[in-house]
Amino acid sequence: MTSMDGRVRYVPPKAYDRSMTSGVLTDTDQWEGVADSPAAAAQPGKSLVPDIVRRRLGRPAVPRLDFWVALALITLIGGALRYIGLAHPKEKIFDELYYADEAQDLLRKKVEWNFDDNTPEYVVHPPLGKWMIAIGEKAFGYNSFGWRIMPMIVGTLIIVMTMIIAQRLFRSTILAAAAGLLVSLDGMEFVLSRSALLDIFLLFWIVASFLCLVLDRESRRNRLLKALEGGLDPTRPGRENRPRLGVPWWRIAAALCIGAACGVKWSGMWYVFAFLFLVFIWEVGARRSAGVVHAWRDTFLDESLSLIVFVAIAIVVYTATWTGWFISDDGYFRHWYADTHHLAHDRWFDPLVNLWHYHVEAYHFHVTLVTKHQYQSWPWQWLLLGRPVAFYWSPAAGCGASSCAAEILLLGTPLLWWSFIPALAGMVWLGIARRDWRTVPIGVGVVAGIVPWFWSELDDRTMFYFYALPAEPFLVLAVVYVLGAIMGKTRQAEPGSDRRLIGAVIAGVYVLLVAACFAYFYPLYAGTSIPYTDWFARMWLGSRWV
Image (cartoon, rainbow, N blue to C red; front, side, top):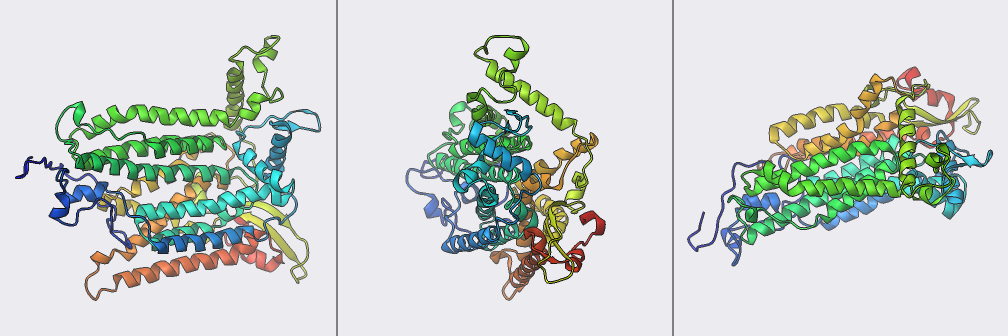
């Protein structure tokens, strides 16, 4: 359409997604690029972009000071909790027996190595997580503090990134603080932040990638808004009317991070597919909000190359994590083809052939791993805490009683984890009722972290509760989303209404109860010696937790 002053005004079709603040408490509704009046919308040299489109596409305002203060305080709390007593126990616990030792091998040989037999070690996980453990061992020595300091650091950074993600999704310091506190007070994240296992590094790179994608979504939508303000009319046909949004730098960063996640554990691959899905539907949503008539078709035409590049970058990063294996002559299967075919040396492309063979063998190991383990569990048990994992046990005295027990039990904070299922149900219901876009990425993150393992259950594969760790921040976000819905928004409350106050009290009481539950189980998370009767009182599900 053309306005009275001769400038282009387009009218977008039916709304695709609602306001970012739909139904959830926010501290502010300030958005960059939002026109507060017709005069503001009619700036010289710009098209008359409807306010509703500006609200959907405009970049959110910079977080206020109170958010950064909350971020600093909660990071300090979470970091201190994880740092205190980090070196206890002095001996290796659970799979530290493998990974702390293999990290030291990487420092000495660049590959995993059996120094007893002076032969290469066959391992079935990529090396990046072990290289990250090795950083701590290089700095602080081959001791319990050295191999646990890097898990502690990245475990704390996960709290930081989760808070930033929550703030970007919910525009609320209160809800961001709740998300940070809940991650800080989760027993599983806590224990793995103090153990030299690979899973905390896997989670770190997944959360980092997701944060980059959230920022990419904001950046791309804001670029689209600027294109509309510059006169682009997406309601008209033709390639010249399709937006050109430039290089998606945040998306590239996300690809780097998810490639690193796969370089820790192969299960990061499920998030490659999940994040490709999110990028595509977010691009479709941006175009529909802008009024693009054939949003699905145009997204496919404009973004397919970008998504292919996303996968290519992830593959390159994953391959690069094997650099130590490539530059060494000692890695397992490093010269497999030449050795099996009695060649004097490798062909120029044989390193990739040998690495592929390594992966085939490792895949065969994973899919045929059906050895029974006393702490194995099935995916349907994970949210129910059906079978936690004992990392450490000692009956040593020191508790002041005749019989003592010291255990490190990989157990999510029960009150928090048992609230995940109703929170997911509530989030799905609210997401459908409100057509709230935020429920999609949260749900996708949960699904990618848990659902693929059900297929492995059909093969009777040996699995453990900590396989659910990548889903944990998304589960926390689901809880926070429901808390926000209970609290409501300022503009929804009628004069004299106590809804926000009541909702805030409910949310505050919930977080305090989670904190109390964490404190009660803290001796089991930190390996503190307590009377045996006190230890047994914490076995709420009896033999399932013993």
